[in-house]
Length: 300
Image (tube, rainbow, N blue to C red; front, top):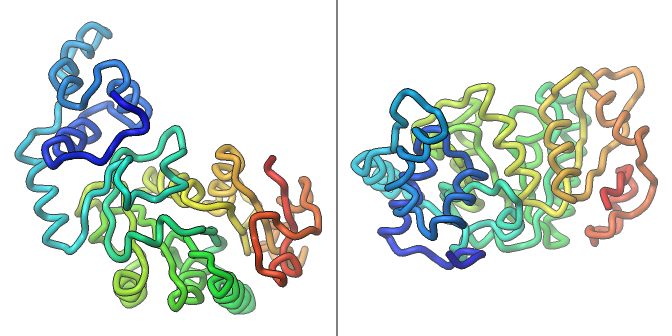
């Protein structure tokens, strides 16, 4: 097959959906199959035999055509669409990631994914001051032409979206494109659907589980020039720090806002700065005041 892929026909999109929804097929396996076999249809035909030759005893479940057609119909009825890697509306920066989702559900203004984007993430139990600072930064960066990406979570994520509603914001969801999580962000979800962009990798109707959030976070970081962490606890595995780690692996910029050493919500961000941050303007950000608030951790 040609690489990167060209825009798909409707039949090819259906085959892609069936393949990525099939058992034991993730993005890396998906792209390997396409490169070796030339098309998703060819991969679907040989997938059960490949599994048997690989030593699998139980039959491998290939996603049924009827279920794929139903998912596309439900997505369309919701006012969303399935964008494939190679489609013009697929987020530009994310397309370069090795494990970019083959298909994404998009609802809203898809053109925002082709603009320069920057991520702001942080603690769910954010301090009031952290929320105010996040709204101010998101608003200022928006006025400088950047689209703000975040995860629609409580705290800093929600504040980032609120600050960027007027200029453009992208919310990456852990569940299906139709599932609002947390539920109290229903109004914010609707505002983003009207003026921004909602993005989801998981099938429509999927309720977010713990395993979905790291996959969402790699989409958040991969969609952006860089990641700003406003508040994050230092304990193992807080989601903002997972996003920062993905950003470094993807060659993105990582920045952090310092906070009081007595505030546990600031320890994760302070640790990012302690591990190598320099006080300098991030080279990918044009906003003059941004560096006044951030420590810059060069990723290159």
